Amino acid sequence: MAAMSGPIVRTVLGPVSGVPLPVAPYSHAVAYGGLIYITGQMPIDPETGELVPGGIVAQTRQVMENLKAVLSAVGSRLERALYVRAYLTSMELYADFNSAYAAYFDAKLLPARTCVAVSGMAVGADVEIDMVAAEGESA
Image 1 (cartoon, rainbow, N blue to C red):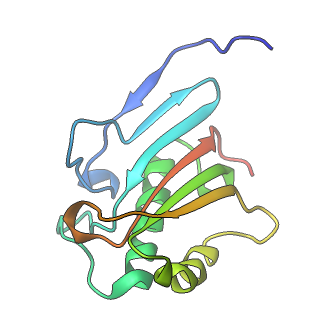
Image 2: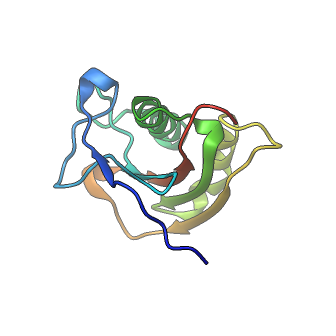
């Protein structure tokens, strides 16, 4: 197996990019070897900096919109997603989460995914999603 090489590109975005400001010391995305590693996105409205109201469906939609904005800012798109990790505060939210999440993907282009329940998240969110995607625009 050949070792990956090339530059490591770290990107910190903000509301101008349609992405919430970082709430801790991290890059929104790190690109290396043709892959983009996206920090877990929270259901924060980038315009207000506040948690979106409306429960798990509204929160999942905001997280997915934030992921789309990060991908767009680094020259990729949701169809290039390879792997997703979703964190929920309760598995009782799983069905509603899945219905909102699935609306963002073509059923033939689903990324690999892990979904786990956690005991709590920052800002009182019920969902957080991180992602690994391929660089580029084509599916």
